[in-house]
Image 1 (cartoon, rainbow, N blue to C red):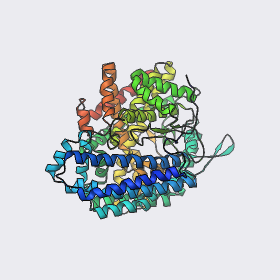
Image 2: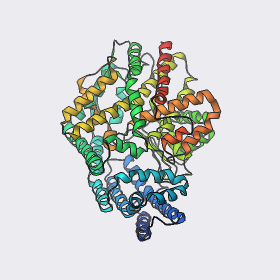
Image 3: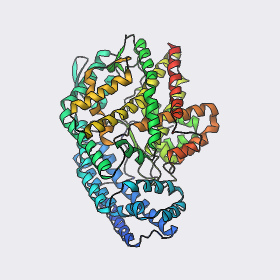
Image 4: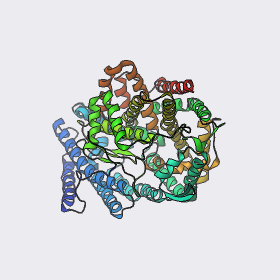
Length: 590
């Protein structure tokens, strides 16, 4: 069995060298395809035959695949080294190219949304197979579409407008250096490195780590706050004033192809269930022999009396693959492929992007996974999480590039499910003491991915409203502090320095209202996992079916086919009942 080593990914499948004539040829080919595509404009007719229409869609697929390959290379290269001028200049060039190509083929999208009458649209959708939901979803946007010149202007200005703001935020925050005393010596650290100290067994160290991060963001609150307010105003001006969406979150919901009602039910249930986690935090304080947790202690390991287990990378990869394999050898095969093709970037180095992600460029190319592996238990779970995404993409690899990606709320399903499989596998191999620790960590994680993300979204709803009416950074911070007080109740002591924490959350900047997708995906995965526990192996085909649908069906419809009504509060409550049972199980072990 091969040994897995910490390494950089190999991007040569995308291009050998961005300076080579071959890469220029790839770009030229793409530009020529887009030019040829523009000629279709004169032949567009709502009465055209289904065959002609499908041929046009195939051309859109080809252009999307080629663009995704080139643009994907630039963005992966940049993630691997955000401080490289070459990578920065390439990503700027490629996003400009992407915008030019989008502009050239935009007319077809607009024609479909606004020029085709309902009768012909129905006829063409009926014959479009797996693309029917995609085409339906596009028609839903018709209400909010603008004229072609207006759309072109927005596309062009986005490169130097909102995209530039996001890039500025990333560039500045990635370059922050955190200085902190560790064992009498002052160390310089990246955000990724200092974040490890938030999970220290020493309360003082945790507090210092948080204060070091929060101080850095407080010092920069003027600039980061200004960037955020402009992003939010851009979202409002374009979305509500110009396009006519009902509310800022509604833009994301329609983009995600979910109903407002579904997300309302989800957030209502999360809000109602905050006492479930509050009980856990009181219990955790007892385990840590503290009267009450402070917000600094939220992620304190409960294993204070035991040395935290350190996992070797090789062993971690193997145990994640084994957990998937026990559920389905097919899914394990998908995950193995990511390693076999050297599509994983796992080593830690300066300039590399923080955190972890999985990037799927086209159905034909195995996804790429980035992690920053330090050997902690949570790194093993992060690995399982990102490989879950990779498995999801590959389960849907027979789909068109236009519908391979699941809509955002379903996008976290496989990643979370894969973590649950890992937990199940690991908890069978450990002592009661270790199980107690793992269970506490697991509930920590459920808090971070369900409750925290839902309250993030609740904060964003308030912040967008507040900024829309005109406000200052300190007022946004007050709103955030209130939000923390509501979710923790009396279970955790919140100090005022956490008011600025919102500006450390990249999702607020990159993708407004993205965070509820985590709550959605996690609660959904918990419900599916319970079904698996009940039905055993007979559930596996149903699960793989849900993944294989990619984005070809609306979430409400796809899940209804498998017996789930996600518009109801009861559905989401089922997921919380699972969380509650875990909190009780922990209580019984204590």
